[in-house]
Length: 373
Image 1 (cartoon, rainbow, N blue to C red):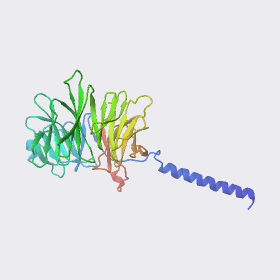
Image 2: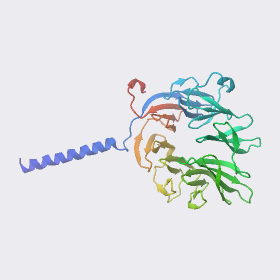
Image 3: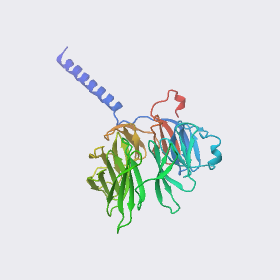
Image 4: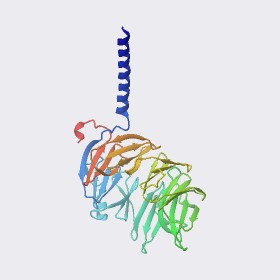
């Protein structure tokens, strides 16, 4: 073969190899949008909430309609006698992994169908509900409109007030996912300025520690290992449960943030970060922190397997690993107002568009193409 022809052949092979590598890289790159497959759409008003159960989804608007995971309307999963007690057109106010709060008074277990009534509050509204291994933490509003946290024992059905909170006002509570212990955030107004008080409880609800931060007010608390993070109007601060300060940041508009847990790491995404700060703060079980660059314009952040996902600029779904690296991108070709995903229905994602339609999608191509819209 002549030298010039040999040179051309080698050059062509190298070019083909590089082109193939680029094509494969482009096809499998997280930057390339992947497809979502539509299964159903539900027309809804703007004011609604969605709850996940073992049977599918429950949409309250304010009356509640139940749907299968694929978006097909189904009968409410209750016994016939339950409809005698439940108000007509009832509303689901809150849900946990295994319980529903209905009309601020009824608690139902969703572990199996039909759903089972667990408890009914007769004289106080149930304002908040958090699920623990052996009990529920119920925040009840008394006749003076004061929020009071109680422990509801799931076995004995006994209700007992949470100890140690005398002279304080309940704000929030957070549970450590690994140990099951939890912390309660309150404030006290017995001084010239309100003070923050944090109380720590073990898995049985027994008080074992407390911290007072004078003349400071925080709105959110997040437990991460043996540490907790407090977020106020313009400050983020971390303590361990012994009351030792770990670190502190002053961030304008810090209260405007989203929180998500990914692989036992706490992520705080700030919508209005100060100049010089990245948009997201990651905190691990040992309170080690790291600022990370996530895209501006994310919303609907939520856990997704070992990572998390969110909606970018109302039109794309981005998937991240627990270190904040983008691994996938999906384009559903709609304007997304809100997104919902739940670990109990991992094959589906629910998208509310800007015109009030709730769309059911799957990440995997259906076996029967007729199921996909």
